[in-house]
Image (tube, rainbow, N blue to C red):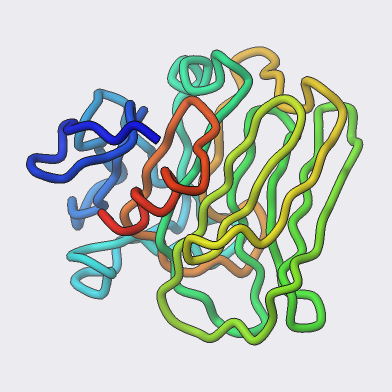
Amino acid sequence: MNIVNSFFGKKEFPPTPFAFYKFNEGSGFVANSEISSRPLTLNHDTYWKGTSGREGDSVRVNLSTEYLTLGGSDTDDLLVNNAFSICKWFTYAQGNSVSIGTAGGTRVVTAYPVGGHWRVMVGNNAGNWVYTTTSTSGILAGWHHFALTVDINSYHLYFNGVLVATASYTANSFKKIGQSMMLLGNTYAGSRTIDNLVLYSRKLDVDEVNAVMNLT
């Protein structure tokens, strides 16, 4: 793993982040990236949480109408290699799902608890789904780090820096079509508060996931 100094001052992040959102704006409908001109739009009832974030402010995406969108051209850039990584801190309330987002069109990625375990589902534009259920159970309420790393053949899900689920699927499941936007937050009801979101346009490995987690 090659960790280099980036736009984060003395912090050393895996190269090269696509965007990094601290969510410290506190008002308005735009969240700006700390390292690039790739804003997220707060949609519908998404709102700022004041000083209740893991670090400073945060955003709440608690209902099916609450989510963040990355613009179509920025999503094109993020998915240019048909690979991406989403790393974020979130609060978890027992019994609720945590929607990770979509990768354009109907390619939905979501995670939710089943019998005390996490189940992650990935759907492609043809409506084909694959899923995996983790062996991890007994997840407690509070702040947790979630990372999803994806390429055209498989995805890996990390919970608090530990690989908890992986699955393979048909090649090009995440091939973007048209100008559809990436949705971050709540495509399914049940997500909570999000903070310190980092996006990559490639698939991170486990060491890189932990580096991002420890620096956010």
